[in-house]
Every structure is written in C-alpha cells, then in structure tokens.
Length: 212
Image (tube, rainbow, N blue to C red; front, top):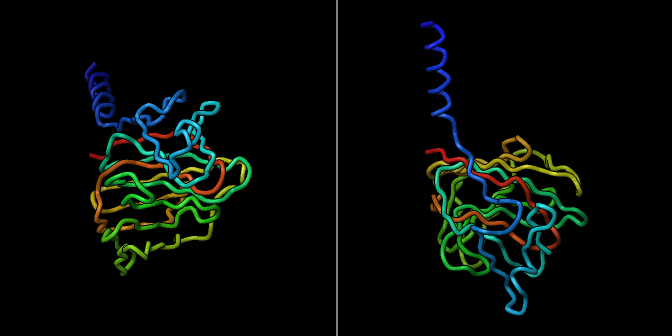
C-alpha cells in the first residue's frame, strides 16, 4: 500500500509541475489577435482570415497579425507552409510600440529557405549573437544567418518553429534543429506576430507554454 501511495504522489507532483500549453488559435476565428495592413482600402478580414481551420493571409500588401496579449518567458510553437508560391514572411517576437510597418520586434525569418535567420527591428533595439552586438537603426535592420543550411520542407509541406524566449535570450529551432541563438536582447516581452510579405502563407497549431 505504501508503494502505491508513493507512486501516486510522484505522478501527482509530476502533473502539477508539467508545463501547460495555451492555444493561440481556436481554429474558428481570430479572437485574441489584431490585424494591421499597410493599405486603408483593404478590409483587415480579407487580409488575414481563417481558411479550413488554418490562419491564412493573401500576403500582399505588407502587414501582420499580432496577439493582443503580451508574453514573456515562454516556448512558442508554430507550424507554417506556403501552399503554392513560397516567398517571404516571418514570426515577430516581443512586438512592441504602435502598429506600423514595422513595429519594434525580433523576427524569426520565414523567407523561403531562410527560416532560422534572425532579424533585429526597431530603432535602437539590439541583440548579441556570437561575439557581435547587432543594433537596429532607421536604415539598418541587422539580419543574422542561421547556423546550419536550410532544413525547410518544400512548398505544400508543413514546417515547425519552436522558439524559446527566456529573459534576454531567444533560441530558434526549425523542424527541431537549433538554427539561431540571441542573447542580451533589448526587448524581453511583447506580442507575437505573423507577417504578411509576399504570397499566401498558412499557419496552424499555434501555442505557447509559460517558462516561468
């Protein structure tokens, strides 16, 4: 009986310590998100929308979908694919400030065959990669290449990003492979964004897990 009790206690403790996932997309609508598009004549609902249980955007003109809620110290999981013509997009991390093209953020690149590249956006924002400090300005948005050759799947197939943000550190994994690590990031919290910048792209299975 004592052995059974101890085993149950261990299971309960493990369950209480497990990380709970918070879904960012309910598969039906874009509740919890806000849309910004760089063209006042375009209806936001025609720019980002739900298609067959996926988040989809037409990709042009430039713009993004951003969570209303802000996050810090988390593991982010996102799956994406270009159904036809693969071009450009990105995942915004620690998105801050007013909506514009583009707000302050760090970006996990989604340009085709460049997923894993890391971009610093926002005047004066900075991050350290390797031994170099990269600082963004009005004219310079530093792009730091991924560690390994591309490990993306071709158009029509699903890829995954697993991104951990802890304090000033951001680690970016593409399809499970670590492709970039930034430290001493000047932004440590903010919204999560999905970029439209080129062609139709689809997203699914979006969730965050707190690392606090």
